[in-house]
Image: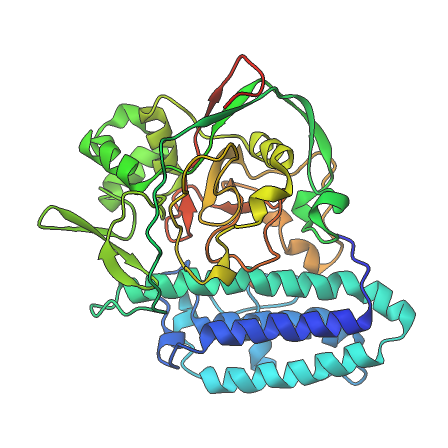
Length: 432
Ligand SMILES: [Fe+2]
């Protein structure tokens, strides 16, 4: 990670990122903000407090003269997983924290904001240069939690019998057109963060940039749609073990999976729980909330496969910036993937809409070096038993998606906003 920005820019960025978190939480009552619907989900107010704890722990504690924490117990309650910082509250028990309440968390945020602004205002040039990467990491960390906040409240509301909506929004009708393919030559390619193309910031897991060898391959020019997923269901896709990875088949049976996470069938019609309420499944919209196991089984059923993360990134770089222009990210406030529109020669929906499962295990890049100290626990220690996803989703904050970004989730995860792009082998050069 490296950044080179001045104090005024840092202050502006700080206020912008922090205010957006509060705007996302604003439609939610203190009761909404307290519920933890499953161990993977965190309460809204916990997200708001934890990102605040991050700034307090990794910036104020080490740089504020006469530092004293806002509250000793807050360090225990809102440390997520940093062994190097100290003991913490159990993750599956975050929903038990009825106190401090949502308003207390607001006071905590205000206190740390005031102290952070003062710190930034009084930094000398040398300290500014030294701290800028950690401050910028705090921004991107908070953006990750902004997305999680939305994914998590969606799950919370899905278990409320009243099926409340987070925010009303009517999607403009559109179509997806037929699935097309783009072919890539492969060969010796470079992947990993490129400061010139990707901007100054990256997480440590995007480094170092390195070479990989790719055979010729093709990627589908849009995501798999709900309509295509219905064909998979109709062809007994959830009932045929030959389509599934062994662990996936176990999860299908243990979980009783018959459709994507938020789908329910009433009188032969599929309905879908969304952040804008429950509505009939739109056949032209990308399927979402499927696990890696489901994505892989679908690809097998379709006679295709999932892309590797190197294939995805190489294609994204060849597509260039045009794919990010109209990306369906959180700033669009659709809160949901939308139809791809008609083919236009590009890889549609590359950024935004749904995080795209790859067939790549989440592993260290050659030469990967985590940062020293507790902050080095940010990414590296999770490089086991998880799969990489690329591209961003409709809940991803603007400015948080880039070609080298490596998201990761366990292969059985369904509550993230995930979707499917297909791949296969090719023997020719670029065609559409
Ligand atoms: Fe975090």
